[in-house]
Image (cartoon, rainbow, N blue to C red; front, side, top):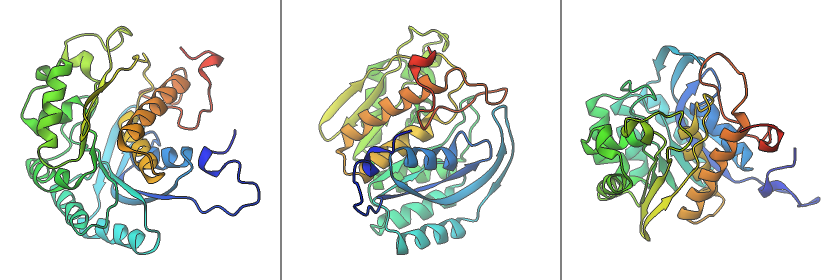
Length: 298
């Protein structure tokens, strides 16, 4: 496989990679969380560092246990990375408890978290809530105002704006939610449309169901249309999208370009991993382009 573009074609010239940091939970199944973030960073030629917020026991079928890391130790991990490796961009994933959300917001308020991308992991893909009311409020009042980019899915956008999932069943409604979240202080909000089928009461396995992402930022509203990839191997798509945005920002891309490129990256990953048989549940995407759509993926 060719080297990622940032490290390719340099001959004998010494290259020091750009650094990015993920603050997220560990997925023992390797498809989401910190593991997906680090794979995504590597696929973009970015050196990944990590601060672990929670350790999960999970596979493609289910989560069987979670151990939350003490918020003070999460901060210690982040500060250790910042003091030595100086990441050019930072993302948050699963923060697990409100105290950790508040602690990371305080670090961001000191100006130490460059190009901060907040993926507000509030609810599982099956609708199970992953954050208490304290954490939800901390996102709204403390962390989102510090973010360069926020990437809620439809369920998370609904929770953050006090709506129901059914309320977000149109692009106009997604735009309204994104604008409300941007008013909290986030520079750019990306409301992801992967759950639009559920919001419309439709079948997510219907390839004709649209999958738009709405981007609201300083330049106004941009709708990024997408073709739905019908596959059960979609575990970690949200983590991978926010990590790809983070990597692109670290490499110097403008925000909208970073989001566009990240969406294309995840789409390729879904196509590449669509027919994999890793585990008996929701498998991962193809982070490294190991499978080509030309080789039989739908």
